[in-house]
Structures are given as structure tokens and as C-alpha cells.
Length: 102
Image 1 (cartoon, rainbow, N blue to C red):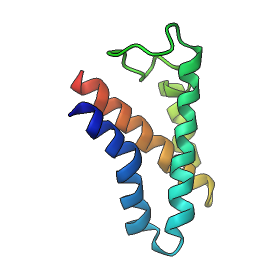
Image 2: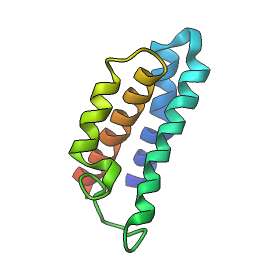
Image 3: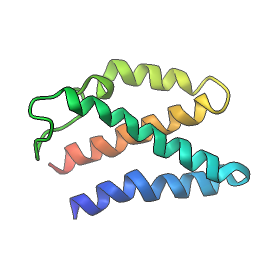
Image 4: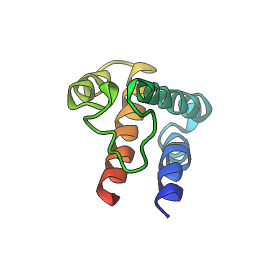
């Protein structure tokens, strides 16, 4: 169930957010939301790269609280930077929910 929720929050919920709040440009917004998943490339620097019950929040460099401060700053810029900030923060919330479930 956790895996299903995790991938829904990474793929389905951003589509809903894009469609509801950015109706005119929902396709481009959704693409930008999907691009924010590139933040997970920082998992490649971990040893081991994948560990089943590891919380990524404050473990991987782009998932730290310091990085999240930058993502909040993105909200004060114009689109598309603002949309990237929303996507990155939503990504962090999704990963945090994973941590809570573990």
C-alpha cells in the first residue's frame, strides 16, 4: 500500500494539482512537476544507492532542510521557477509521508 501511495503522490497528485490550479497551462505544469523528480538523482551518491526503509528527508543532499529553504525561495519567483518550487516542495512532502509510514 505504501508503494502505491508513494507513486500516486509522485505521479497522480501533481497531475491533479496541475489540472486544477494551472488549467490553462496544465500540460507544461505537469511536465515541470515530473522534471522535479530529477531531484532523486542525489540518491546515486548514497551507499547503498537503494535501502528499503531509509528516510530520504535530511539524508540525501537535495532532500535536506537547507535545500528546502531554496525550494521555498523559488515560490517568490515567476513561472516556471515558481512551479518548480511547488513541485520540489510537494516532492519533499511526499517523501516525508513515506518517512512517517515507515
